[in-house]
Length: 128
Image (cartoon, one colour):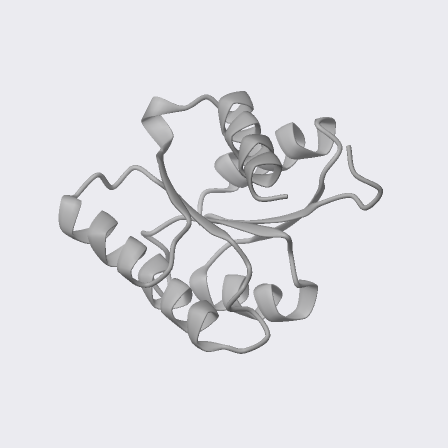
């Protein structure tokens, strides 16, 4: 791994999902920050300046799409890569996510947590 440990922000409203991803990324050598809703995710994106954000779309307080829009409109956070990690497979939502600046889209049901870690690792390698 690189000199600096990459920091991942996982924004998901399900405790078990956050914990699974936190565990997987920690075991793979990443630093992990978690948020339970959209507002907290947006706040932590600004405070923690993660190297990547894994963002669910269906979130309380602020949807993932609203969070993504706010992240990409903010000078301090707009360059942070965002992967949408969700069970929503609606084409219009996926399209909107990419139009707003999402760097990728992973359907939770199609990836195991370890495969998500591999996708993130690959993203960092491809964009080094």
